[in-house]
Image 1 (cartoon, rainbow, N blue to C red):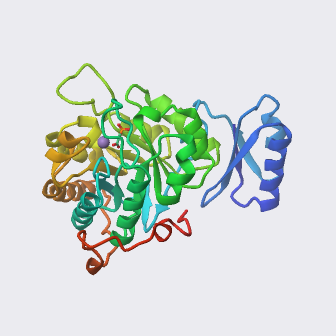
Image 2 (image 1 turned 90 degrees about the horizontal axis):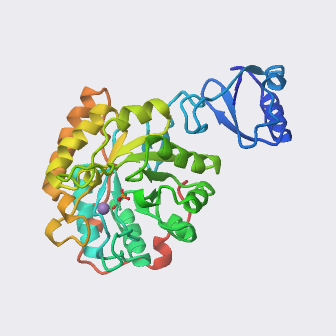
Length: 368
Ligand code: PEP
Ligand code: MN
C-alpha cells in the first residue's frame, strides 16, 4: 500500500501517518520526493486499513501496489532513483561507465588497467578480489590483498571502486574498502547476503542470476530496500539459454522492461552477457540505445594472460573505441557520458613501491 501525502503536508502529519503504520504492525518506508512524500507500507499489512489512513490530515490518497516487489516498483516511486557515487550521479541523464579487470591479479596489473580505463574515460574501477569460480581449483582472487590494491588505485586515479562480496560475514570488511558492493549472479538469491547489504549504507550493484527472471531480480532488490538501503543498481548480465556461440544470452528486453517496472538504475554488463570480446562493443551500444543507465565492462592489458574471463576482456585500445561509440549513442538518446574527474598523473607510477599503509588505504570516513 502507498499513502500519498499532499504536496503541502507537514512533517507532523507525515510523522503521524508513520506512527499509525507502526501501530498497525507494518513497516513504513517514507520516500521523500521533490514535490511530495509518499509512505510505502510493507511487511505484515493485515491490520492496515486504507480507510483509516485516507481520513488522516495531510493524506491525499491511498493506493495499493499490485507488483510483489513493493519498494522497488515504479508504482511506489514514479521518478527515477538517482544517487551519487563519489563525484558521479547514477540514474540521471549521465551514462556511467565502470571498467577494469575481472579479477585483481597483482598490483601492477590492476594499476596498469586502472590507468588505461581512466584515460579512456571510465568513471568507476571494477575488479574482483573475492571470485565466485565454478571450479575450486581456479584462481579464487587475492582476497584482502586485492581490496588493498583496489583502494590504492582509487586514491591514485580518483576512481570509486566496485567489487564483489560473496558472504554476509565479509560485508563489513568489503564495505570498508569498496564504494559499491557487487552481488554476483551466483549470489542473487543468497538471502543472508541480501539482508546483510540491506543493513548497511553502501550502494549495491545487484547482478541478475543466470537462471533468474526479471521478477526474481526485483524481489532480490526488494530485500535490500526493505532492509533500509535504497541505493541499489540492477545489472543485466545475460542469462543461460540453449545458445552455445555466446557464454550467456544478453537479455536486451530486460533493459526497457526493468526500467518500466522499477525506478532503480540499470547497468548492463556486455562482457558476461556475451563472453566474447568481439561482441562486447556492439552489445554495449545496444544497451545504451535501449535505455541502460551505465555499463560495467571487463578490460585487461593482456587478455591472453588473464587469470579469469580473458576471452571476454577488451584490450585497452578497444575500450577506448567502446567509450567513443557509447558517447555517440548516448547523445542520440539525449544523454551524455560525463568527463571523468581529474587525477594527478605524477602520482601514478605502477612500478613505484607501495606508498600507503594498510590503514591509510582503508576508507577512514566512508563516502556514503
Ligand atoms: C564478475 O563480475 O566478474 C562476475 C563474476 O560476474 P557475474 O556474477 O555476473 O558472473
Ligand atoms: Mn568476470
